[in-house]
Length: 76
Image 1 (cartoon, one colour):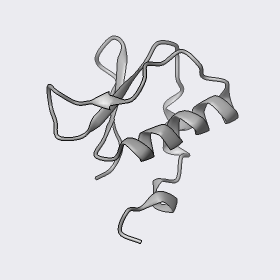
Image 2 (tube, rainbow, N blue to C red):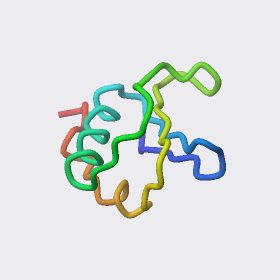
Image 3 (cartoon, rainbow, N blue to C red):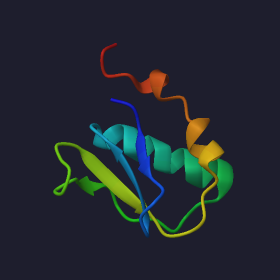
Image 4 (cartoon, rainbow, N blue to C red):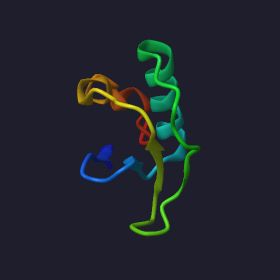
């Protein structure tokens, strides 16, 4: 599954099947772009299965797009 971002909601939500991939994305956003205001990664109870976290500060969509999810593929 690819990362899915719901830009139309407040706060913005980021979804993926893997909790680990979302945690790596959070590290990328924090270390490379200084993004700190976000929720913890939690189970997606509304649209599950999968996990999500919320962003509580502005985030450029290119920051998420530059995250190379293929490095962390669970099929390897």
